[in-house]
Amino acid sequence: MNNLKGYEVMYLLDPELEEEGLDEKKERLKSIVESGQGEVKSLEEWGKKRLAYEIQGFNRGLYLLVEFNASPDDIDEISDKSNVEEGVIRYQIFRNDELAEPVSS
Amino acid sequence: MGRRRSNRCSACEGKIDLDYKQYNKLKQFTNRSGKILPRRATKLCEKHQRKAAEAIKSARYLGLLPYGDEHGSAWK
Image (cartoon, rainbow over all chains, first blue to last red; front, side, top):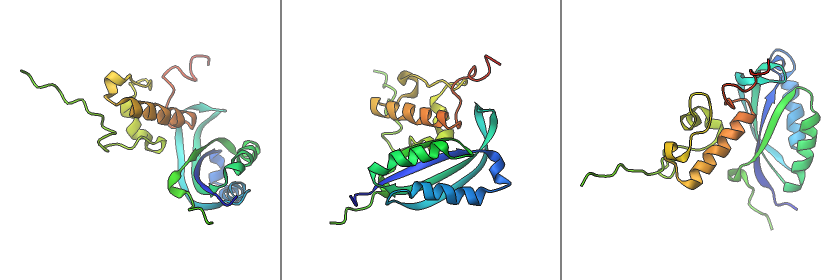
């Protein structure tokens, strides 16, 4: 069970968070990602960007890249929680094999 | 006798990283309206064409690249 794999998730957030509550939201998202036994490795803020097309009425969005490791069994839970998290317009989880933890026997 | 133009895949040569985060670089594999170019135009090998297409589609979902110039405007 301690076989953690590397992942990264890109969050597209409501741009209004930039003015208010971004730090709070970051902590929320961190705790979502760490729902299981995983751990956040890095959190990279891309800042506010213009969207290539309108999404849910937004023309701009905040991008946040979170690198973490987690057990593959935790990913469903992270998705479910991200789905209902307020201020998240879209997100996508990717495998990132560079972050995989060597299996401790 | 004419030498054939070299047709090697730029990703195989390590010149480009096919990652959605490098979405500005991925634009070279789309046409001006944002559609993914065919392999004969991108000069990528099968494997890397597939990777490029996947990366472009991920970037599209996240709003980093357009789906096409009619997307989101035709029904307004």
